[in-house]
Structure formats: C-alpha cells, structure tokens
Length: 311
Image (cartoon, rainbow, N blue to C red; front, side):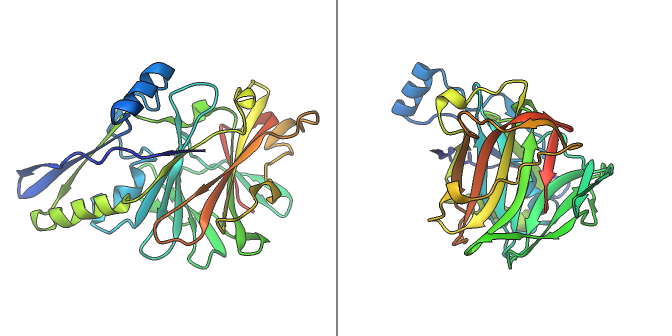
C-alpha cells in the first residue's frame, strides 16, 4: 500500500466579470522535494500524466455542488490504482458529507447502468444517464446509486438496497468489476478547476475547498506482489468496498465478485496459486471506521466495461 500526499493547491487566481468572481483552483500530483524527485527520476515512475480541466473527472465531481450551488462538500480522499505500468489510474473519490453520508465517485469512464440484479435474476436495462456516485446512508444500512442525465441533472435513485452485514461492525457497500485498467481514467499530473462565485462568497468557497482535503492521505491500491501485477486478456479485476474497523482482517472478508453469465463468461478460479488479492484501509476525516478497498484478480470475461455489484 502506498500512501500519497499531493501538493498544496496553488494560490487561487481570481478575476471579476459581470459582477462574478472566476476562481481557478489547481491540484497537481508531482513529486515534491529533492528525494521524491530523485526516486521519480531513477525509477521512471510517472504517477500522473497530462492535464485535465473537466469537471466530470472523478477527482473533480465531489466539488460540483460547491461550484454550482455553493454547498459544502465535506471531507474528500482519493483512491488510485496501478497494475502493469505507470501512470496510475483513478479508482475514485471518497467523500464524507456534512450529513454524515459516505459517497464514492467512481473513476470509470463509461458509467451507464446496463444490468440490474435481484433475487438471483438478471434484468437487462439501459440508463440514459451515468452513475455519478454511490451513497451509503449515515446508519451504514442502506445505499443507492445517483444517476446524472446527459444534461447534468440528477435522476431519481436508480437502485436502493441494504448494505450487507458481513461481520461485527462491518458491512459490504458495493463491488466494481472491470476487464482492464483502460476502463479507468488516467491520473492527471495536473487538475485545474475553474468556477464562478458571487464576490461575497468567494473566500468561503476557497476555504471549503482547502478544508475538504485537509489531512487526507491518498492511497495507491494494487495487488499483493509484483509477480501478479500483470493482467492478461483472460483476466479481470474486481474491487470490493467494505466499511469496518481499522483492525479488520481483510483476508477473512468474503469476495462478492460476479461469476455467472450473463455478467461474466468463462469464470474459473485460479486453483494453483489462489486468487491474488490485497486489502487497503482508507481513512476519511470525521469517520471512525475505515473504507476497506479489496482488489482481486480473476479469470473470465466481463460482459460490459464496468459492472457494479449491489446486493
């Protein structure tokens, strides 16, 4: 598990047009200091690549309600993933809201919902919008998906469900299966967010932006050892998200990977070496529990580029 600190956001740039402030907020993921730069140069590790300005990026979407409505966003942490080669990819953003909800904004580039699963039955559906985030309610007992329509408006919750209790003070939130990392957004080296604000509210919004990620330690998830990092065309990746205590034994947690058609075809367990997996506890300011991200590698073919598992 690699823990990462991004640089502090650059000082805001503010201009005023038609009575509105335009605020520019830059977040980058470049090595800081002599030693990190030396390691970066020697290892050829390129954590991020390119520059991004889109607010649809998983790193930016948690801030949307602040940009659009001026509402506080709570506390934010980022989770990245690396397999095969650098740069890394965005697994998603975690957010703990002022209303004590946990949100996850997935970094998959195509987020349309194509399948619904209930009572051992599959139903083929097709959403017109895309998954913006997955919410776990304050009691950690229920969850839902929030869909954004093509015009950016929120749709009614597509799926409401109960979180599955899997142990003492531990619940399964959701799962995500992808065929390969090309489904995930590439981590940018630099993210620039530009938004307008009423002049009287600009300082508050800047303060809210800075507080949202204060003390956050970003996480780079991967598999359990270098020999198993490579992903063949016959293999796919699965991520299980649990919420539980910091002393949780991740090896004892169940795996909720889909294994049956039509979701996954040709599923087969790796009998000789077992299923490669690794657990990563992620912290959020204000939350006593950890969000446990368990990544595992499986043999089979996923029917869509990304599959969300909600029980």
